[in-house]
Amino acid sequence: MRFLFGFIASLAALVLIACTSETTTSQNSPDANLSAQPQAPVAPINYIQNLNARKTQSLDGKWARIIDPYENGYYNYRYQVHDNGFFKNQKKEGPRDLVEYNFDTSPKLTVPGDWNTQERELYYYEGTLWYQRYFDLQKREGQKYIVQFGAVNYHAIVYVNGEKVGEHEGGFTSFQFDISEFVKSGENFIVLKVDNSRARDQVPTVNTDWWNYGGITRSVFIAVIPDTHIIDYTLSLSSDMSTIKGTVTVSAATHNAPVTLTIKELGISETFAVSENGTLAFSLPASPKLWSPERPKLYDVSLSYDADTLRDKIGFRTITVEGDKVLLNGKPVFMRGISIHEESLLHAGRAHSKADARATLELAKDLGTNFVRLAHYPHNEAMVKMADELGLMVWSEIPVYWTVLFGDEAVYRKAETQLVEMMTRDKNRASIVMWSVANETPLSDERHSFLGRLINKARRMDNTRLITAAIDTHSMSENEIVLEDPLAEKLDVIGINSYCGWYWAVLEDCAKKVWKSGYDKPIIMSEMGGGAKAGLRGDAGEIWTEEFQATVYDYNLQMADNIDGLAGISPWILKDFLSPRRQLGGIQDDWNRKGLVSETGEKKLAWDVLQSYYEKKAAE
Ligand code: GCB
Image 1 (cartoon, protein in one colour):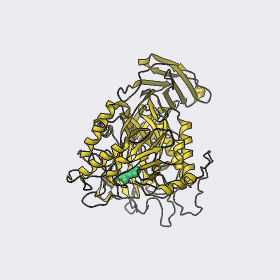
Image 2 (image 1 turned 90 degrees about the vertical axis):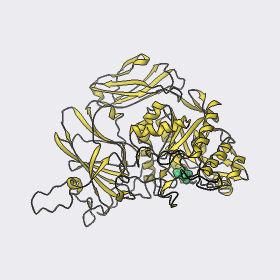
Image 3 (image 1 turned 45 degrees about the vertical axis):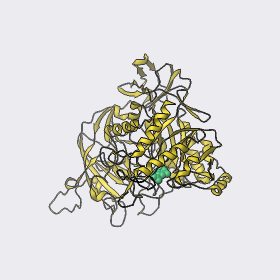
Image 4 (image 1 turned 180 degrees about the horizontal axis):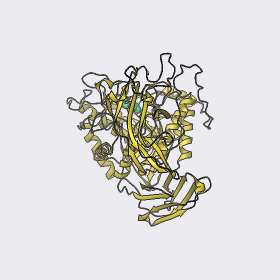
């Protein structure tokens, strides 16, 4: 879409590449005056792996809600933070008590679920909303109580029994708080202040092309784990495919207990001693059946340490690049993909469940895909687990989208935190083959440094996957398009977003375009497409008809075949999705219409075009 022509690209070539070494954080210092906004926290990543495989108590269901556009439950009339805000869940005790809120008599929202699609008056709402519910618990010695939120968009402050337990910023990643000190046996209550106001210094920033769904959008539960427990583990296949490598971190290493790893089907049952700092690393000879889209083999893995035991299902594969090829398990693979937003086919709004994931990914498979680009932020855990199970390679990304404030160190920390949170949660998913650090970001030294640091961070954390980003800067002369972006040097796979015949160029010329890249790296056309309103039939020359969209696909797929080093495509997009940028009445009505299916799953003509292309590609 955003196509920068020759002269801008030549300027880009002159861009001085900024140093990408890590620097220390210099968070903006809090405003000294009392009326300061709450400090945007950048959560320290303190995450217990696979917590939902432990003993859990769900907090999904109905929560009371209070809409609070003036943040009256948080600030007093002098705009100072209340010490007696709504988080106290106060009740009127005497007949003359003045308490101007009551969760018990307030309407309810379903968790998980965005608020926008649950109540008409919340459809466009951006601001603060309070959530509250009660839960019972039997507290026991030697146990820890950890609350986990799959995601809350965008900023959450969590209180238990009237006390603040923590806050989190970032709408698409999972976070946990240890609430052991805050809970008691019997009835407890939990309150959240959730704020989905957009702001320039957030990740994403104010300007996106998707709906800003607010609320507790993914499941919530309390896990009960022993004081002495497994904190983290990583298992992967070595690059020569001869060993399973792993690391485990535990709490209380002085406890002296060993860690046991069992993968029955591979005849593995090993016991490891833990070092003093609570970690261990191992490498075990093994020849697992390799995970692939054709055979998505997963192994039952169990780990135990003292009284803590957990299970996981893990696949083993390698993903590498050689010149302009992507190799899965050492063999070149063409990535037949589709881009997907996290919206459900089964109900309005954000997807969150296993059923949502199955419906979406089975539809993607019907198209003939072996790959999905989960745009533009980390999707819920059910999606990546389903991709593991169904055999779909995944591109997973953080919402460093368009024009985030690349020069702001605090914004960098937010982006890095989301990257770390995404990678930490999903590092044992074989389906994820690529981490993406950005989408369509404008060229500048600051952007280059910012993304360079994210790439370095991702590489330090994970050397078993590829790093990518979707870029849109190219130079063009007549029918030759030259890929030019200094960021490409740092990526393993170059994603290009390009809307030939929709946002630029005459459609009929697209097939003549020839793409050149000087990078000798695999290229994925991470977006292409055009819009159509399902059921609007007519002339192929008439925009918004299904015929026109199908023709856009026709020409663009011909163009794709002219791209040097094309390793795959993930056209935009599987399903129509809500976006406030899409205001054309009668056609869009808030929907980005580039879906191959409508919001209710009705297939458009372009579906067949892409499906036939994938049949051909699969047979090559
Ligand atoms: C893009 C963006 C994507 C938009 C799409 C569009 O280039 O990456 O988020 O939704 O174009 O439909 O314009």
